[in-house]
Image (cartoon, rainbow, N blue to C red; front, side, top):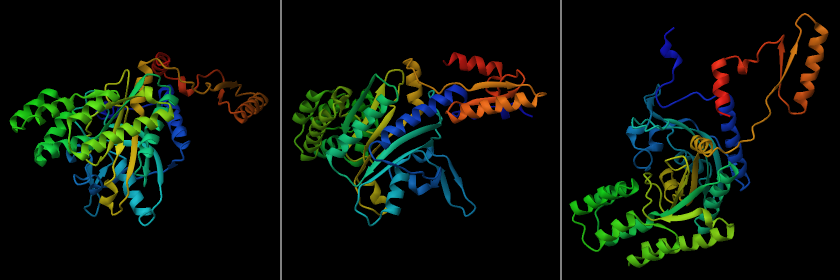
Length: 392
């Protein structure tokens, strides 16, 4: 047998033992918190038709999708993102109903990118989608849910950064920028590439004062003061309304008691083009990328034939685990299984140990019944045992 068969492809990995136990603990804590807000679980297929994640939908670029064909010749993809799948389900099963829909989920997503930079191509995500509620109160609820979820998962040091895509769109409209320039500018600003933004504005001959304002927006983040400054920079109603919504949102987050976890970033522009309003990301110590991404997508369901506003978020479970590890956070794992050895040649000893094992299991304690003094399977591999010990 080829040794290559023992290895996983680049960008995916095996998870087992105590590391997997930690992951399940985090998943359960996150799902319990989300369920506490009345969200109901939904399971969507691991692969869907290509059109669910097409360019028109505004999700992951085609070159980053895992694509394949069924026997009928239809192009299928492994899901790179849950939100379009949830939107499809809501449109399919609630097409004529004007009700608030609360879906939550957990599962793996797949992104076929060659520029890994230490990232996995397959990650576990959990999240929630609130469909049918256009209010700022819904925005506040989802952001407060993110904060409570991260706290309950064991994170103590994190920050939720909030922006509003309409501020940028209104400013571009006021400046009279063409669609191509807006898209290129959005890519530069969302990548936090200040110098590329400056070069693009010069190259496209963007007039003052908009050149300076757009450069300032690319680097504009902070507390409520930054919102006041941003509001004074524009004259168009679209941008002004965006700031006013953020001001109201901040007030509501005060009622939830989570202001200390919140900051604002008007240069936050997601690569997902389906976002239409408030957007947010959560960052924590020990992980370079955002551990939570979310926002409002009021036009996405229209792509599937249903007009309904929506807001949601996704938490990257693998990144939460990495952050907890780097922050040396303690996770209360279940007790190790009790090992009960019996004498194979003594039937009465086996019966006694079996009875003891059944009693322990009835109390919720895991028990291993093993002949003689054999090492339980979970620790039979010395290399594995050392690995798990180092992960304590």
